[in-house]
Image 1 (cartoon, rainbow, N blue to C red):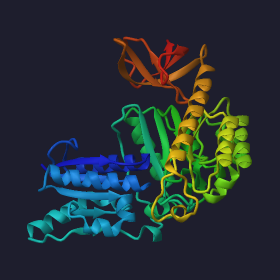
Image 2 (image 1 turned 60 degrees about the vertical axis):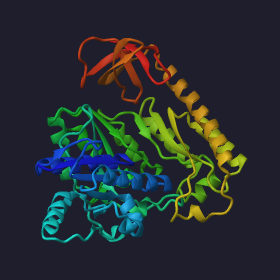
Image 3 (image 1 turned 45 degrees about the vertical axis):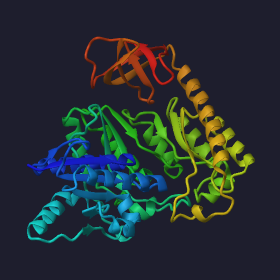
Length: 437
C-alpha cells in the first residue's frame, strides 16, 4: 500500500478538489497520511492568485522533495497553469497535473509508476490548454474533513478579466456542473449527515447548465431532505436581479449571509479594476436583497492601494463601506501580480501608504462587525454546533448562526452536528458571542 500526502493552498474550490483527489486515492488503495509524514506520493494543489502564492507553492513542492527525495512529487492547480516554464525547470517536481486533469490523478500515477518500472525517468506533464476548453471537470465527494458543513463545487472558470487578477488564465472560461450531478452529490452529503452545504465556484454567480441558473440550483437544494442550511460561497452584483432575489426570499433553507464582491467603494478605482458596476449600482443590489430577506449579513473583500488610488479615492471607498454596513470586511493590500494589466499600471502605491490604509480600513471593519453583532444580543437564533473548545478553563460548544456569527454555549451535552435554538447574551471574546440554550 503506497502512502499519499496532500497539501492544499488557496481557495475553497481548491479545498474541494483536494478532498475529491483524497477520496479517489483512498478508493484506489492509497493510505492517506499527514503532509509532515514520510509518504510515497506528495500532491500539492497550488495557488497562483498573487506572486506570494506562487512562492508558497514552490516552497511546499521543495519541502516535499526534501522530506523524501525518493517520493513522487506532484504539482497540480493554478500555479501549474500560469508558470509552465518554471514548473518544467523545477527539479523537485516529478509530475505536473493541470486544472481539469485532477480527476485523473489515480490513472496518471499508475502510468507514472509503470513507466518508472520500465526504466523511463522523464517528467510527465498533464496540462490542457485551460483557456480553450468548455469541459467541466466533474470531481465529486461524499464526505469532507469538516464534520458539519460541506462545500460543494458547482462551477469553474471566469470570464471577467479584472485588471488585477490572474485567475481567468489559470482556471479558463466559465464552465458549469450539471444539475443532475449536483443533486446526486447533495443526496450523498445528506446521507453522510451533513446539515449545511456551501455552494462554491470560481465565479458562482455565472452558473449556467443549459439555461438553468444559480437560483435553480438553490431551489433544488432546498428540496433535498436532510440538508437544513444552504450557504452561498460568493455573489457578484450581476446575478442580483428582482427575479433572483424574489425567488431567493422564498427558499426556506437559505442562510441570510452573503459574501458580496465589492473590491472598492470608489467608482474611479472600480473602473480601473475592470469591475462592471458602480458603487451606486452595488448599493441598490444590497437594498434589493434587504427588501426580500430580513436582516441579511453582508461580508466582502476590499482592496486598498490599487494603482492610482488617491487619498480621496481611499476615503470614498471607506465611506461607502460604512454606508453598506457590512457585517465583516476582508481587507487586502493590493499585491502586484505578474501577467495582469494592473501590474503594468502607472502610479503604483507605496507599501507604507498601503499599510496605513489597510490598518485604517481593518479598524473600520472591526467597528462594523461589533455593531452588527451587538444588535444580536437578547435575540433568539439557531446554531449549527461544530466543536468543543476550552476557554479560560471552561468548556464550550461552538458553532455558527445562519448569518455566520460564531456562538459558544457552556454545555456538557455532545452537540456536534446538531442545530439548536439559543439566546444570545453577550460577547465572550471579540470573535465569539456567548449564548444559552
